[in-house]
Length: 186
Image (tube, rainbow, N blue to C red; front, side, top):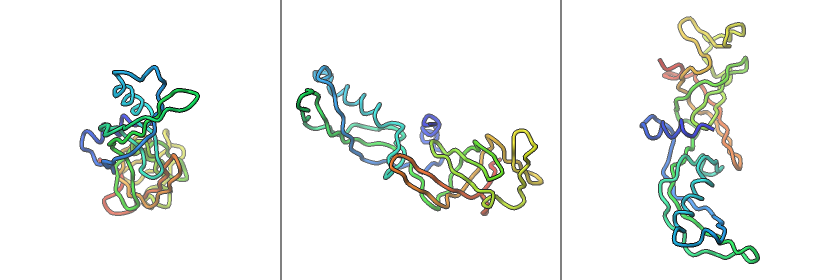
């Protein structure tokens, strides 16, 4: 997954559909971590567990901003581990239908193009690409080409999300570049 790229977009101010959200997560720690460095161990485990993951409801967790609270622990009988319910603040990436986003083309084939927007891969069907673009299967690399523009791997494009589907741990999206002000970014 390309979270470092998305983190760079967020930090540089480049547009991405990101939100500041308060979330919860359950963390289990071995008894050897219980001691004066408890807060540090809980924070480190939180970063390892949640950064870079996708929740269907909130989207991709880009980065944890702050640990809000982790309250009292429950001891798990028989194991002795402590379980904490952690509240934290995070930046999440969640695109919605109708949003306009910038991304880089990762795959070009006769069915359409795949555009990477951070960790999300958006499919743009050939029917949602302007009709003046023709697929050139013999070009190397494969590309969609018009009189004055070319869409190939690593081309920067601006697209509009026309649909999303949410899975338990993944997001799927379909986009278009067939409207005004969308397409190849110079």
